Image 1 (cartoon, rainbow, N blue to C red):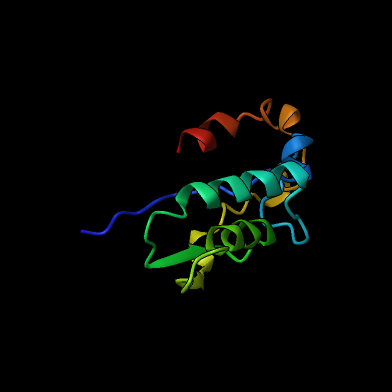
Image 2: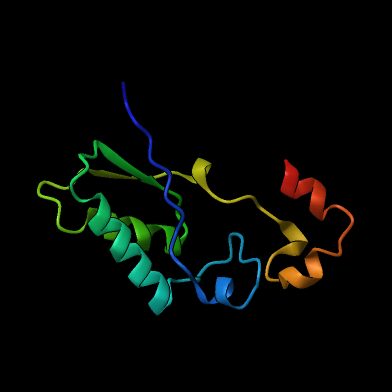
Length: 111
């Protein structure tokens, strides 16, 4: 039986600034996020991986690259839109502290 390991991307400037990045292009890992991705890659290095699946977002691909670092042979990396983040529409790039005041925020977060 296969085991699925879910890994969230490392920190980005949007995360650090409390901004909902969503599918905004050009959001990369910051220094802390690169360190987080390197650490999880090192921790999972002894775990055999058949494949790594990531969304097309830069921050998730960068995190996946750290998961593959040091593996010989490295497993296949699959980029898949369907594992991408929710598309937040008008909420994208807004501060979380203002979004929590939106009437639908709790509904979206609970679903």
